Length: 106
Image 1 (cartoon, helix red, strand yellow):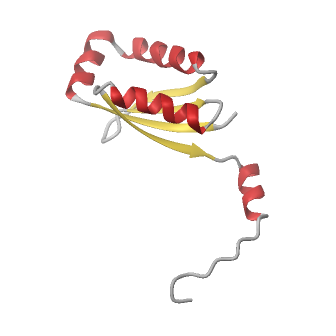
Image 2: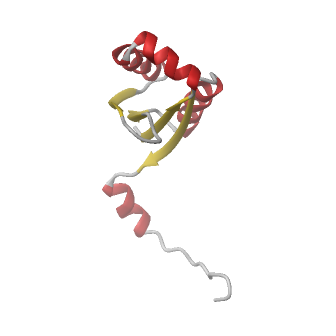
Image 3: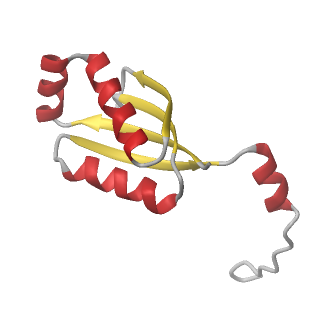
């Protein structure tokens, strides 16, 4: 199953909700969200800085990952950035593919 890094940033509304509900409640909510869409939550961390939450999740496919990210971002309480993660084996397969590319001016 594909893995994704999801980075979340709370809006003021989202931060107020977090302050009311707490961190473990958020993790349980995200676990349930992933499971409801055929996935799992591998890691959940709050952080200091521009990004408030880092998640590693397994989801069935890119369309499901996009649907989850759109629903969460559409709430207005959280912004989400999603990155598809590649295994070393995925990279091995990628470098084995010959690509004919001419750069601009080349």
